[in-house]
Image (tube, rainbow, N blue to C red; front, side, top):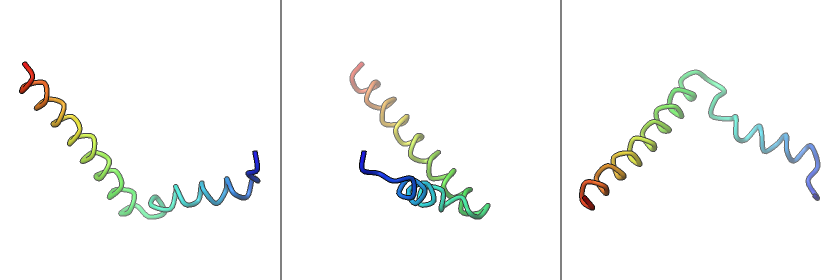
Length: 51
């Protein structure tokens, strides 16, 4: 709507910032795995308690 392409570019650069180095990208990957692992554990525990 009111967004200019430059705003989208700035947003994209901000999103991609963690991937500028290999170590930073690896930390983001580990963080993502940890978040999804936590969600899976919570779902499994909730189902076990509800069963």
